Image (cartoon, rainbow, N blue to C red; front, side, top):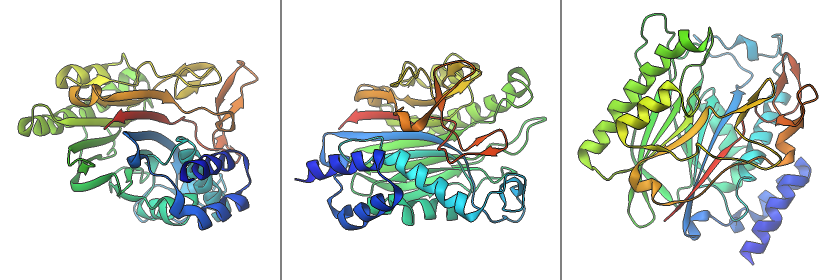
Amino acid sequence: MITSIGGLWRRVIRSAGRTCMVIIISHFSFLIPHSSAAQTLTLVELNCENLFDYRHDDGKDDTEYLPEATRHWTKRRYWQKLGNIAQELLSTCDDGIPDLIALCEVENDSVIHDLTRRSLLRGANYDYLMTASPDRRGIDVALLYNPFSFQPIRHRSIRVEPVEGMRPTRDILYVAGKQIGDDTLHVFVVHAPSRYGGERRSRPFRLAVAQRLCGAVDSVYAVSSDARIVIAGDFNDEADGHLLQRICQHHRVRNITKDARGMNGVKGTYRYKGQWGSIDHVLASRAMESLVDSVYIHSPKFLLEEETLYGGYRPRRTYKGMRYQPGYSDHLPLVVRFRK
């Protein structure tokens, strides 16, 4: 009975309007099947594409996303965006909800509170942890978790000291938690500096993040050489780039999403000038790699739009240049299922 309702609920989320979705969640949230009841643990990674609220944060350069700014980022658009992101995340699983969700490009605690408590996600009962970084725009990372399948025991924000010419960047989020069966899982959420100014010029900034991450992972390995570690996020680097190579070679971790593909011709999580690329990745230690059940890019058609210039599809984003459209994100979600 629960499985059939859960399946129906997923189909409604994909096809129905906002009003119908709210009704179903409010009446059937206690029937939502958790993937912890199955034999897998599901991790989703998503860059939310500028998930800002519509209020100014003191000391942050977030004026671009205010009602009176050029983008006219209003209260209505903000709540539309939250609803879209929630719908996107819920649609990634047909048989429950994701156990862990690593989010990039989220502004602050109030945004994640609204997402988990006041959007379509509220029936899923997620808890969350997030950073409070020195990033000038106020961009942070967060980890949403299903408390029925993952219970944090410690966490911290890992500050990345800027190198010459580098702006303050996002902290790395580290969370260690207990899974069902009492196994400890170590999760790192990363959002490395962009390629603004060119890949070569900005490369040292991303390598600074890699060095800080490597030191943190070494600390975990020092306690347990067979630790279960997952590193997820937007690395702003391709699978064969300097940043990913540095991390994988140093830590005996593997990029388990390197060959991930999606439906509808999707070959990456991001598309630029007609070319698919993957700058979002999930890395895993050997102990976790051996438990991988499936890996894919979530790309149903409602997350896509036709690309008339180059052909095919691209992610349906929130803005085309400065023109607003009620889209989702310029990135697509990565989904990894691990056997328990």
